[in-house]
Image (cartoon, rainbow, N blue to C red; front, side, top):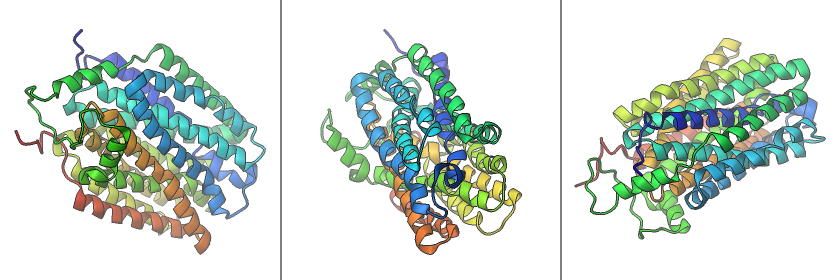
Length: 428
């Protein structure tokens, strides 16, 4: 049976996967405003205990990074849909654990499950969408995927802030979380198709000796059926381009860890109400999500490398500016500018990895890149928590993240390269 690739011939399935990633974003977003802001008053975290406060994001990053790696490999053996279903089953206890948490340790434990859920579900939506679309639609595909996910993150942060103000943080999160996860589980079971056959069909088109109109500069492996160890080595260190992309992915998560851990506390202590905190952080998420409708498509036209480097720089500047002046408008504007930087780099780092990863092992390569990227949550949260702890100032953590972003941009500029096969094709 002929399997057509492209968004248009697979529109129904493409939209199902976009709905899935929206629900993935809503699931993680419900923890991003209420939980950190009320960690002291409702969950027993001592004031200015920055390392303890960051512990739930450290746990999330470590677990999600590992699960991204596992999910990519599992999906090539067992299928994308099955891994997606497992991810939603794991999520069911999360809102219950947070709602009835007697201590901060329960919140950390719930976040461990959230890391498993996010590693399995978000990885599968991206991999499945790449399976069914064409190479020249890759930037658009990932832009739409990240748009749906991070709009979900932003909306959940705003909605749960209002629910917490009206019904209390625990009951608000319980009702919201169970509704989102229950709907996602039903749709994953009955609406999502298995896309692994599309990936195998694409791989056959790029087999040796088959004529090709577009020639990607695939990273070179030593064997036709590479082991997990071989792909991990290649993506992490073996290929300079993939190494540069992986380190950029890791460091850019420092920004999101900062937004998750310290933005709510910083803004709440500055006198903003919980809904106002939700809107400032929502500006970051909404711009990040919305702009990816344009930035993913933009990279299909002008390439990945420039948007990636500039995105890192803009994020660094946006983070630093947050502590230079006070005011609701000031914070909202710079949160939005930081979101714009994330929109430039976020889908396009992933698209660059996909450009130079052969379809036969692309799922593993994306999983390994996402392992390093989401490990950045753990490393970044721990780093900014330690900096804030030893300096006694939250502002120092902002400067730490900004500096890391600018240094990482330099590494990406030096070791990275344009990966779009139309703009930088392999030799004939």
